[in-house]
Image (tube, rainbow, N blue to C red; front, side, top):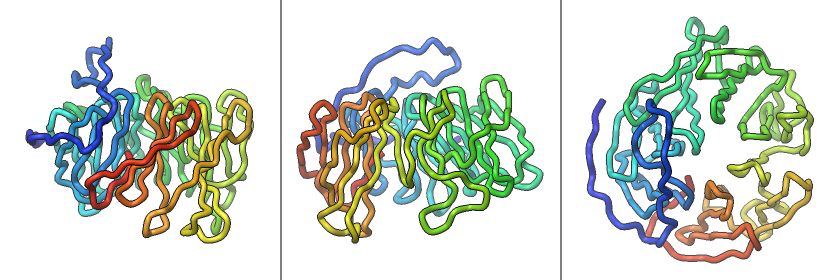
Length: 312
C-alpha cells in the first residue's frame, strides 16, 4: 500500500474546527474523526472541515466520506484514501466495484459482485486491512449501502435486497427492494428512474425502517445524516431556470419546512450536502458557497477561489 504525505495548504474558508472524540474500538483507525463541518472538493484537492486542503492526486471520480477521511475512486482506475493530516493511501478496491461508506464510521464497504464472486468486503481504509468478507448468493449488485453495522445489497437481476450484519456476517433477505440509500431510521427505495422503472420495483419513496411503511412517495429523495429531514429538488419546468428550489421536509411531521432557492451548475446539476450535526445544508453555485442554517433556514453566500467546487 503506497502512503505519501503531502503538505496541506490553508483552506480558503473559515470552516468548523475538528471535533475531538475517542473510540473504544481498538481495531478502529487512530486518526481523529472529522467531526461536523463542511467538506468539499475542487478537482484533486479535498477540503476538510478543519480547514485542511489536501491534494489527493485524483482529478475525477466518485468520493465517499468516512468518519476519518475521504475515499476517492477514479474513472481511470485506482482508489485512494485521503485524511486531513495530508496522507494519501492506495486502496485495493477493484475499478468496477460498488462502493459505500457511512460518514459516521471509519470503514468502507465494497462489492464486485459477479458470477462466482458474491462477496461483500468491509475495509479499514486507514490501514488497508480487511475487517470482514461476507459471502452471498448474488451474481450481480446494482446498489450498495452501509449504515453502522448494516449493509444493504440490492440485485436488479434477482429483484431482491440482502441485509447484512457485517460484524457477525449474518445475511438475511430483506422485504424491502431497491434500497438506494439507507439511514438510521429511514431508507430511500427506487427501482430505476422517472423514465424507466425496473421490473418488480415498488413505488419509489422513503420507507420507515421500524414500521416498513412508506412515509413519502416520489423520486430522488435524499436523507439528512440524522434522518431528521428528507430533501429533493423542486423545479417548475426547465431545471436551469431560477425557479429551482431545494425542498426540505421534516420527517416527523411530513411537512416542508423550507424551499430554498438554488441555481444549478452549467450542467444543470444541483448537488447539496449536510453537516453531520444537521445544523447546515450547503451547496455551490459556480464558485459561490451557499450555507443555510437549519434553525431558521436563512442562507449566507461566500466566494471560494476554486474552479469546479463540489460538496462531499
